[in-house]
Length: 276
Image (cartoon, rainbow, N blue to C red; front, side, top):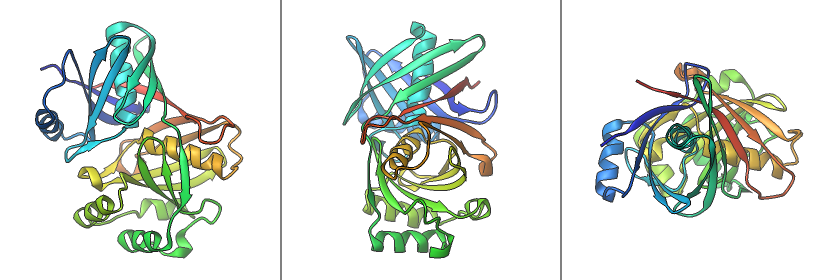
């Protein structure tokens, strides 16, 4: 069984978030896909099968199947470009249809996905209280310009914006407690954000629901966050850049392009590197 290992949203030849990519004529069984994802140990592995002009894609973390994963989609776009040449590839997910564009540029790879539709809603008081307790933050640590919210761009996330880079660097929590809480609340990840400038953000992403303490690059949460900034009428000027994974030693670079249509897809892009 051939599985590519590709780091998506890399910073040149370093960093990025590793994903497994399995492309075949037929899906393995659900139990086999779960086993493969667990053995690889990456936050997600994507499995893809061609259906005519479309690719059916499914995503597995080491603990469970997830509805959508941005960095694994970027990795899949890079893999499809390697195998079939540059192009735009339609993807059928469990709950949405999207596209990913893969490009080869000399010795490098790049990809861009169009996310599922985005939406957001203010975080309920009880959810916020529990989140702050889990991660050891206080109300004073929150940036009032970006209120806590449940955000969606193919999967559900909670976003908490912090007032300083130092507060972001201090993010910590108990994995087992976080996993039980996130599964109960139907949250795939918790996205922590620090705004350096209106178009430049630093983020960290807790992925306990998938059995992973932290993800170094999260395209799905980034798409959902970009959609939330649109909902807030944030001065994004049509694009934001995100630096993630620095505190893990896995610096990753993510770009998101935001149009003016409420709820519409967000284009998320980055480079990718083939891992040994």
